Structure formats: C-alpha cells, structure tokens
Length: 503
Image (cartoon, rainbow, N blue to C red):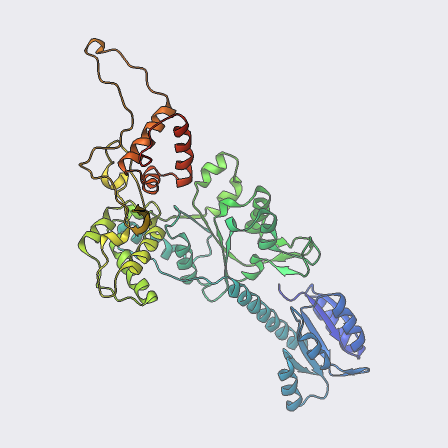
C-alpha cells in the first residue's frame, strides 16, 4: 500500500480523534497535531504520504503548508478540511496544490473514498516515475512458421489467466516480446507492468529493488522507497533472467509467490500485494536445480505454465519475413529509401545459422540498411555474413568462421572497410599440421601425434600465410583477438619461426 503514514493538522480535538480512529482501523500510521508549528516540526523529522490540514488554525492558515511542501523531493498529498467551505476557496486551494478538499462535518464513507483516490494516485505517480527511467520499446511476434504459430496459441491460452508463466529460450529469441504479449492479452492490461532485469542489478541491491527499503535501513537509504513488487500491485511483474538471483533472495521470492506478502528491507510491516508473475531464463533451470544453484521449490512455483521460445534456426521461412519487416522499420528510422533485397541477399539470409537469433538478424539488417544507397536493393555484401558450419559444412581443414562486422583490411599501409576476404573454396586450405610423408617401409606403423602446442603454432602460422600477412584478417579467421595473435607471434618469433608479412 502506497499511503501508510498520515499527519492530521486540526485544532478541533473531536475531528482529530475521529480521523485517527478511522485511519488506524485501516492499520495506518497516524500522527495528529493542532498547530502549524507542530506540523512543520514533524515534517522536518519524518516522511508522510498524506496530510489532512484544517484552514483556520491558532497560529496561521493551514494553506500556508502547501507552499512549504511543494519543494520537497517526494511531497505528501494534502487534503484541505474546513467548516466554512465555498466554491471559491476550494478552487483556490486546488490551484495552490491541494489534492482534495472536504467540508466539515464529513462522513466515514467520504474518508474511505478519499483514501482510495489517494492510494490510486500515488500508485500511478510511482509507476510513471519508474517508466520515465526505463522506457520499453514494444513489438509484436512476427512469423508464420509452425513453431511460432504454436507459440502464439500457447500465449493466447494462458494470457487471460492468472497463472505464473516461465519463459525459456536462447539469447535473442524474443522472450521479452512473449512477456509483453502475455501482458497485453491479460485481464491486467490496464494495470502496471513492471520489469526487473535480475542480471543487471547487483546482488547487494536486488533485495531492495524487489521489496523496497525503509529510510536508514542501510548506508545511502536517505528515504523510504517502494520496491518493484509494490509498484506492480494490481498488475504484472516480469522477472527477466530469473536464474541470476542469489539463494538468499530466492528464499524471499518464494514467500512472495506463495503468500503474496513481504517486508521492506529494514522494515517490520508486512505488505500484501496482488501481482501476476512472469519470469524468463536462458538457462536450463532444472539442471541448475540439480547442481544446487536454484531452489527446487522456487522452480516449481515459477514453472506453473512453461513456454519455450524457439530459436530462429527452427522457424522455417521466418527469416526472410523478419528481414523484410526489419528493413522497412530501419529504412524509416534512418530516412533511407530501399528497393528491397537482391536474390543473393535473401539466399544468404536463409542459409545463415543465426546463433544470435532474432537479435542478431535485427542488428544485421540495420547495418545493411545503413550501408545501402538510397533507392537500391540490399546486397549480400552489405549483410557481412560469412559461411558457418551449419551453412557451408566447413572450410578445408574444418575451420568455420562467423564474421558479422566489416573488418579493416590493410592495403598499402592504409585501412579500408569492406566485406572481409576469405579463402576460396577451391584454394588450398591453410596448413594445420605438416605431417611427414609416408615411408613405404613403415606402412601400418602408427606415428606418434604432434603436441597440441605445435599443432596450434602451425595452424596460426599457416592461416597468417594464407592471408598474406594480414593480421587483422587472420585473427578474424582464427576467432581470436588481434592482441592474442600478436602475443602468439611474439613467442614464435623468439623460436626463430618464419612469420608471413615480416619479410
């Protein structure tokens, strides 16, 4: 509940006592005073969510507080109460910043309605503040393959329910999009949708992020803060990459899933929430359970309705559809007119293995759009895709390479950017191991294998020779950084090895 601490400022004892009794029955913390000075002293020492303020007081006008609290970091709501109310005075108070205005004598039902309005308003403000800090780009599930149609069917069945959903899949498959679709098609679609990236929050702070904290509960806790579960009250919370949370937080999360209640860090008040939980993971949680990294009871609480998001390689026919959709999107974004794709480009897209799934495809298309001249078609060269093990088998010598970005090719002492050159399939492969020629007299005898270190050396030197000494290209082909390659070559140089490109 986002309205918990209330200050009553009224010089009439009967009004103060009646309000105190009604609000305390709601298990709220209430403090009451009779003068402006007392109220100001309390505001300096403590935080309040809501103030009931009388207009006519012994030491001034209650509306003076409106100006004084306006500059507070998290100002409380102010309800003006008076026995001599007029339309003009009500309008004046509302313009000055009052949340509401009630006239004495008021009934308990009036206060109940007012408290509900205050709670909903503060909840809305907190959620809006959260989304101001973390914007979310919406998208839809695109595809016509049988696997994606089955996924849509499962989402359609579980979305209207209150069931907890566990979404699993590889990185880049679109697990968050599935969570968005669950939210949009649920009965809570007009309530808050709060997302928590469990992998992006440090272990020391994640408990506070989940459940909030009280003022002074730890160093840096300068004021009370509601956690993500409180912000999601009445709506849905997405726990992204749930496998990354520590065992300690797992135990507290289990209680929230079971009882829908918790305490803030440093607090002793039990807070109840009504939230639907959706979680995602890119790991095999059952394997993590067997290894002792993840609680078994929490796993079964989360795995009420599991949904698997298929990798792009299992979505037959969707690559081209997604590519065309992304091309239109990025063409509008970057102000480039496109004439579509060349046939060779579409073939290259369909043949690629896409280990990075939809995210990799999206990034590839955006780069290709930027590299394409306005009015032209996207060419295969602009995609910057290299054959991979799944698309071309392997180079001679079994060394597949997946290269996504244009590389700097050294030529005449200058660097130019373009698609990387690769060895021709008909060209001889880089030597991996220089095996001695067979001796007719030794046929049938097994030769002792070379040491692994020697095989690595010959493989690296052979690759460098194939690229005519171009270290940048050799590093890309080998799948190592240029720095690692330099370190290896420095060792080989000491051994007196010939290094291509060094004369």
